[in-house]
Image (cartoon, rainbow, N blue to C red):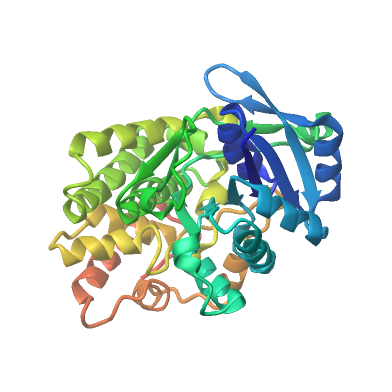
Amino acid sequence: MKKILIFGAGKIGRSFIGQLFGRAGYAIVFVDVDEKIIRLLNQRGSYRIIIKGNREEVYLIEHVRGVHFSDEAKVIEEIISADIIALSVGQQGLISVIPMLAKGIAEKKEKLPGHHVDIIIAENIINGDRFIRERLIRLLGPSFPVDSYVGLIETSIGKMVPIMTAADLAEDSLQVFAEPYNTLILAKQSFRNPVPDVPGLAPKENMKAWVDRKLFIHNLGHAACAYFGYLKFPGKKYLFEVLSDKDIRDQTYGVMHESAQVLLKKYPDEFSSTQLEDHITDLINRFQNHALKDTVFRVGCDLKRKLGQEDRLVYPLREGMKGGMFSDRILYALVCGFYFRAKDESGLYHPNDALLFSDYPGDIAALLTIISGFEPLKDKDLIRRAQEFCHHINIKFDPEIKLI
C-alpha cells in the first residue's frame, strides 16, 4: 500500500486529509503529541468519521497507526518511507515539526536520492510554503536542493469541522465529525512527484487565485454574517440561528457577491460569474448546517486579526479600490465588525479581543487607521462613509458601544 504520513491527528488531519487518502486506499501514519490518541490509533488500527449533513453517514478509516512526536528515530523512518507527507499542526506546531522534517528529508535523499518529497501544507496560513522553505534552507544548508527535491504544496482549506461535545468525545475519543464537503484545493505545480490519484483532490495552476477565493468569499462571508447577526440578534448563539433571518441572509449574500466581483476583476481568466455565484450559494447553505453548531462568537472573534489590512474584509476592499471599485457592502461589514462584542460560553471575550477592548477608541477613524491600516488623508472618503455607517448603526441598533 502507498503511505501518507500526517503530522497532526486533529480534526483536519483525521476528518479531511485522513479521510481523503484513507478512502483512496492509502495506509495512514499519524504523528502527534497526544499520547492517548497515538495509543488508541495503534490499538484499533482504524477510526470513525461521522458525516453531519442532511443525513448522517459513517466512514471507517482503516490501515491506520500512530507515532508519538517524541520518538524522533521512528518519525524519521516514517518520513523516509512515506509516499507523501501532510502537515496539519498550526503555525506554532510547524516551528517544532520543521527541524524533524529537515532531518528526515536529508536522510531520505541520502538513502533514496531519486525519490522526491511532496509535503501537503494543510494549514490556513498565508504563504505557508515560503515559511517552511526558508526554515528548511536554513537547517539543510544552501547547497541542499530544497526547491528541486522538496514539493511544498499550498492548499486552500475550505472544510468546516462540526463542534464535538464532551459527551461525543467520551463516547469515542477517536471518532471525528465532518461536514459533507470534501474538496482539497492544492497547488498543482508544486508537486515534485505525480499528483496522487485521490478523489477529492483539486489541483490548480493559479493557486494564488484560489487562496484569494477562500479569503474573499468564504472567510469574508463567514465573518460578515457573524457581525451582521450579532448587531441584529446579540443574544443568538449559533450562526444557523442568525441566518434563519432573511435580512441577514440577504446581507451576507450581498457582501459575498460584491467581493466576488472584485475577485472576478482580479482573476478574469480563472473564474466566471456563474462559478462564483454557485460557490456563494453553496457556502451560505453550508453555513446553515445545524450539525456544524458554529457559534457567532467563534466565527467573529479575534478582531485585530480579522479586521486587519491583510485579512478577509480589508484586503478585498483594498483590491476593489485599486481596480476603481468602491465596495460599500464590504466597508459596511467591516464597520459592523468594530461593534462585535460576542462572548464565549463562559461569558468571556476572546483573549485578544479583551486586550483590544482595554484600550479601544470610540472613533471609527482611529480604528480604521490603527487596526485596518487606512490613511486619514488618502482614505478620507472611505473614512467619511464609515462614519455615516456608524451613525446609521448607532440609531438603528442602539448597540452597547457607540462609535463616531
